[in-house]
Amino acid sequence: MKKGWEVKRLGEFSKISYGYTAKASFKQNGLKFLRITDIQENNVNWENVPSCQIEENDFKKYELNEGDIVFARTGATTGKSFLIKNPPKAVFASYLIKVHLLNQNISPDFLLLYFQTKRYWDKIAEGTIGSAQGGFNATKLADLFIPFPPLPEQHRIVTILDEAYAAIAKAKAHAEKNLANAREVFEAYLQSVFANRDNGWRHETLGKIAKVTGGYAFKSTDFGKTGEYQVIRMGNVRNGVIRQHESPVFIDSVDETMLQKALIKHNDVIITQTGTKNKRDYGFTVIIENRNYLLNQRIAAIRFSDNYLSKFFLYFSWTNLFRDQFFANETGTVGQGNVGIGAITGAMVPFPPINVQQSIVSTLDSMSIETQKLETIYQQKLAELDELKKSILEKAFAGELL
Picture 1 (tube, rainbow, N blue to C red):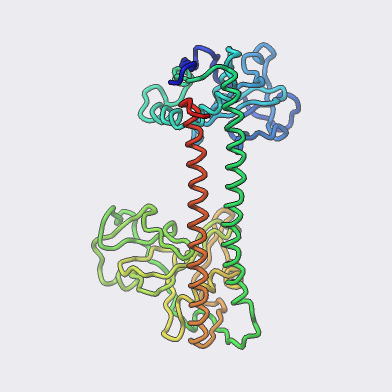
Picture 2 (picture 1 turned 90 degrees about the vertical axis):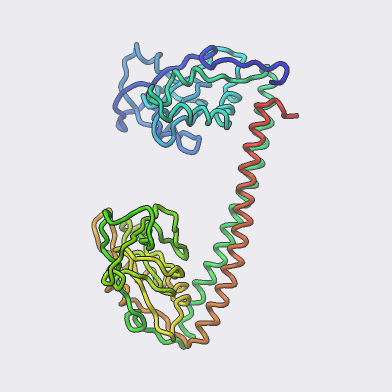
């Protein structure tokens, strides 16, 4: 530890307490009742925070003040912290833990930075896994050892990190914009290729130029962790991608009847048929390259003749021209949407000469490859910026910032 720094238990210089148990009300004004769900992206819109009834004698015990830090104590956000600034008259809910500083020589902004470090999150992981004391709690929080320098140095570190984070955020925004632009260029060209109705192409229903079959209703009890055949389920399919490692299941013993109904062949296009109604979060298509895939129910296989390229249809299936047709036939309940085989076979698709199909596929393949290269560059840039932010933070608490 660098000279001049101290290390103390959090409980030595703060008061740590649990929140208030009450029912939230959106009909009242005045006293606010901060919950885990009100903290979004490290920000709270106090106007949207509900109210609660609390006795005057209890208010001081649960009051939120400037400089308090609250922690999520349950769920996916366990351990996440938030610094209270400019609060209205408010209390905090029982699924939060509050740290109220008793020592004026500790900066709340500096302390908040510590709760973003790897060493802090490692402690959270240790405390929430396999714990007989119920995971993350006030006792474990109080036992954390916090390193800190004199107050002026804390302020200096906070200023440096604020400036660095602002610069990193600006660079990330620029990289994200470039990433979105790369995708938009490909998407715009893709849409334009198939939107030109004056090119003399003929159009046919999909059922006239391809064989469309539904997946097989496998029993989940037949699935294993290994086997000769992987069963492709809806979670394994995204546009242009088979996610083989997304909750994979296998079948080892397959009879001839099952093979005839479920085995997907090389160059088949498959399309998912079920998702959330009105959300368009399905209808994903991909070309099959692996020869040992079996198709599960609620996914259709589309097999084309030699005069129609699977890749040509794949690109068309990503356009609004196809997806508008597909989702126009959506049925189902409020929560679940479905599109049947009949709607797929009835979709109108362009059918230009084979040489035109080949030319279009070649152009789109080239653009797709270039787009993927750009995406890789920008995603790597985003990853490097995240690592830079972590590195600066770790140096700060090692006393290594110049």
